[in-house]
Length: 272
Image (cartoon, helix red, strand yellow):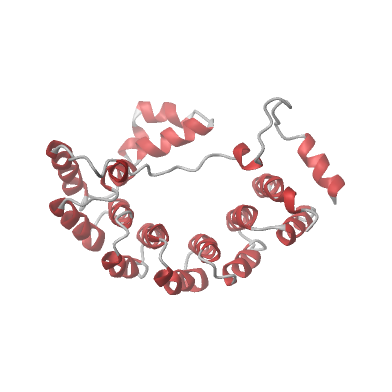
């Protein structure tokens, strides 16, 4: 089995010995990260004009229908052609206003803004903006908003449900374990189940691992890929051997590439 992995690694792009990182996770695509600038400047008063502009943007978009205008824009079309890590980040950042609103509003303490966010998170008609509002509220770490997120988990729209799930996990509080576990076991979307199962495992519920192992053998290649990614992030020796065993039976190239990444992450546990 080690020989198989060595053969796989030979065909992966690898830095020179002088540049080889100590942690193989540095070789993976970086995740999009909400920087939440408000949380870094809590000791400073925020210019009211900034809050007013953000409030105006939120009010304008909260009940608007999702549209595909951005996808037809020539500039966005150029972004779509960039296949580097930075290119993917830029495309995500500038095709969804919700991403920028989340970043600007995350951790908000201004009462008017917080009230409008709460209204949007609970009643907004635009699923993307509603999901973004929930995530922004989650960065306050205020458990009084948890009921909004729990209601969002029951919404028929996957965008809203996923936003609610991400919000609960962002709060990172033991009290939300039950709700996250329910999503991992019963949500209509297998993608949501995978993400929730990884959250369960991170929160200390080992049953999340069992769900990921099951979904890693699902007939849907995307579900398999996501499950294997999280097994690679959170697992150890047993997961290493499992993924290596599955590799010989996998035919989808995307899944195989995810397996390689997971195996690289877990290689330090190979002897366990």
